[in-house]
Image (cartoon, rainbow, N blue to C red; front, top):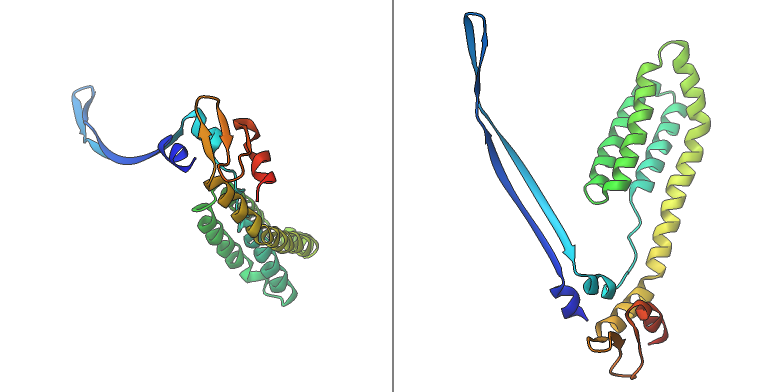
Length: 210
């Protein structure tokens, strides 16, 4: 099984540089030359055959750290408002943005969503002046605790569930590693127990085996 999945999966990456030649622009009797430029680009690719995709074991996704970035930033905002450090709120938002960028490097979807949310809050805070800033502070006083609780609490629950399921993921991986695929009958079977199942029923077979 592992050999089939490995052999049917391809990954590639590369980079290159393109040269864009310059050109002359003429306006009446005058002309000017716009110089050329170079651009650097990178690419990556990932592909699997239908069989390799069907035989790949789904071990689930790791929880995102974006939960803690949003919840932690909301908690810092709440503490700063409580202690009267309203003028320093933008620094807390910028710290949250920096952490969101770090998260995006490993989890693009969650990191970008977190980054978008923090930038919206930062923009509202920056545009709110005078009396409006007091309104924003009042709103954040009520909203920040809820966001902090959902973010930190939700992240803690997600990671606890993920860690609690670690033994089961290890068992499934161990069982999956000893399975074989019969190309003639298109079946997945376990040579130790003699049990087998069709490829679409592979997960149910893994659940039965120990």
